[in-house]
Amino acid sequence: AIQLTQSPSSLSASVGDRVTITCRASQGISSALAWYQQKPGKAPKLLIYDASSLESGVPSRFSGSGSGTDFTLTISSLQPEDFATYYCQQFNSYSFTFGGGTKVEIK
Amino acid sequence: QVQLVQSGAEMKKPGASVKLSCKASGYTFTSYYMHWVRQAPGQGLEWMGKINPSGGSRSYAHKFQGRVTMTRDTSTSTVYMELSSLRSEDTAVYYCARVGSSSSQYDAFDIWGQGTMVTVSS
Image (tube, rainbow over all chains, first blue to last red; front, side, top):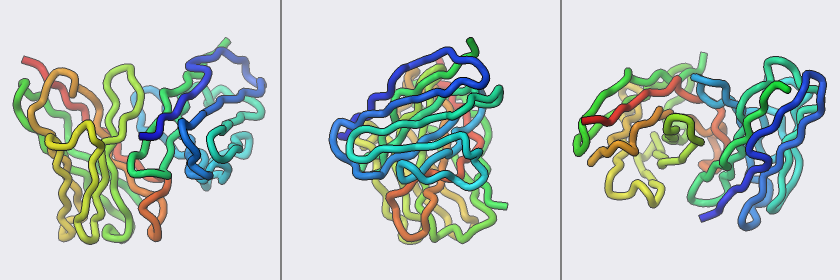
């Protein structure tokens, strides 16, 4: 099964900071990667699909890049509502694996 | 609007089974694959399996094969997930989630249910 490794597992940042989260796949998955945001007690919310496509209604400060095995989620200017946990997910193979998550906390 | 509404919280004893429901509305139920994902307290997301609401075919994560059964009722636009032989490690929030494409089963999950808490305790 394809494994996804996210880093860092947590980070502290300030409002206005540029934040980058990485996701590495154990084998190539082309661009079959999504990013989700999850806030406490809520269901995950789709941010990015196909590695770099912005889901409708998601602010443009979120962007995704990468293909093959290495992917990045970038928040260009962190806003108060962006403090949450972020997950990557691959949908290339039989098993729709999630990464372990990155918790973005307030510095 | 497009939404998935899940059944309410459950408390079960070890060894029992639980059957959760997920009712879809606002779109053509049979056009989009549905998945189940769970999240143990304080932990990450874990994919359990998927079902094609059109033909009923399903695929399960290896970890759950033999214990999970996913079904659907097209007359009520509802998918079900039954998990048997429950143990304490199955305590989690269970989500249903819709694939975002009507033309591919391999796509991101664009619509999620609100989640159902299942507690397994003696």
